[in-house]
Every structure is written in C-alpha cells, then in structure tokens.
Image 1: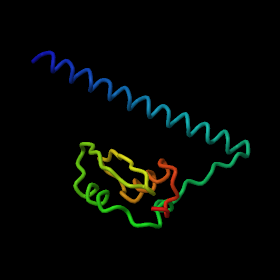
Image 2 (image 1 turned 120 degrees about the vertical axis):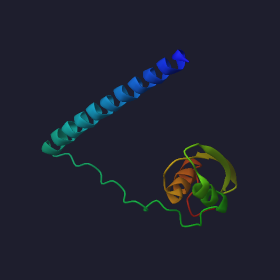
Image 3 (image 1 turned 180 degrees about the vertical axis):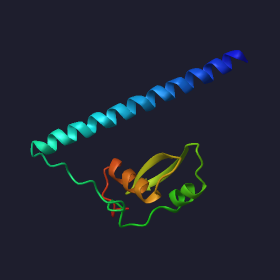
Length: 113
C-alpha cells in the first residue's frame, strides 16, 4: 500500500514539474515571438476553427464514437477513400477536426471519401 502512495506522489511531482516546464516554454516562445516581430518577421495566421472541415459527411461510426467518448481512448475503423484506417479517439475535441486530420494523415483529399 505504501508503494502505491509513493508512486502516486512521484506521479504528482512529475505532473507538477511538467506543468512548470510548459509554462517556461510558453514564456520563452512569447519572448521569441516578440523578438521575431521586432525584426519584422510575420508569423503565419493560425487557421480558424472549422476551416479544415471535410466537404464529405463524417462517417457515422466517428460521430457515434465522439458522442460516447469518455476519457479513455477507443479505436475505430474508418474507410478513407478506400483506405482502411484505425483511428484512436478519446477525450475532448471536435469530431469534424478529427475527420479532417484522419483524411490528411491518410493522404486523401477530404472530399474524396
């Protein structure tokens, strides 16, 4: 039992350290962006949410998995332009963006499905 507590404490410490490192990286990135901006470099505009939504309808299995998705990851099989793809989904997210990402990773145009 004490090993379990020690392991949990170790994991909590690792999470705390990772969050501190992320905060430091964010700070450094902001400084780098300020330096680049002062030098006249323009950063690319991030895409607006929903700009990568495929023209074709999302597979029903992906939509159903998104509605039943919990914090656990779940594999689902998708057909992307004749290519069978296994996508592992879970957690928060927009299933339309998942579908767009799957199409891109499969090397298929999003409206070819």
